[in-house]
Image (cartoon, rainbow, N blue to C red; front, side, top):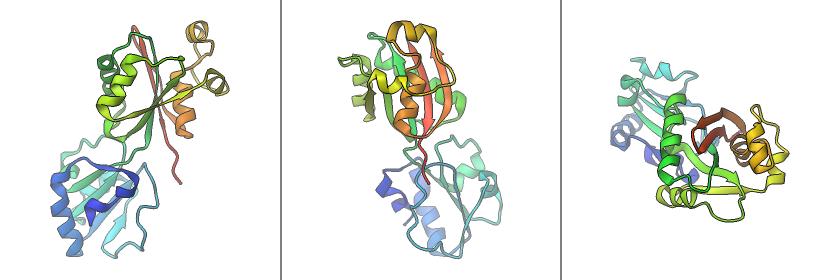
Length: 216
């Protein structure tokens, strides 16, 4: 069943209203395209049915050759034709590294993430966790954001973050935190993957970087 795909990995479905329609096409063995650019790769435990084709470009789902599409991506899908004929799965494939002040609010964090994700075409639903530096006490805004959105926060010691090479080290961060990077370093350490969005400064009290988790 289409709605079971990725359930073991905690993927979410963005447009559940299309599940019944696409499931019917699957059952009736109509031609269906699958496009994946993020998330776990071992979600299909049997050979793909003959009516299912893996495509290397999301645009190919537009083709009239395919009745429907399955999209597994952490990127925003903007093409209405593709959206209407597809089920869009959001794998938990992104880690948001965050540098902030004691008084940075949960609203500021949400607005900052939304701004960066919109600019870079990423889906909020694909955030696995946030990551930041250990400040020896809980940062209220970060804790409140975590609870409100059910997104966990991973905290790392300064020495661990200091060992990570980042593209945008900061003298200011070095002065206040004792290391040259919080947002980029923590997102890379937590994801064990690649930096996708370099450090974005959101004055006066927030920096955000995003890394994508590597899945074979």
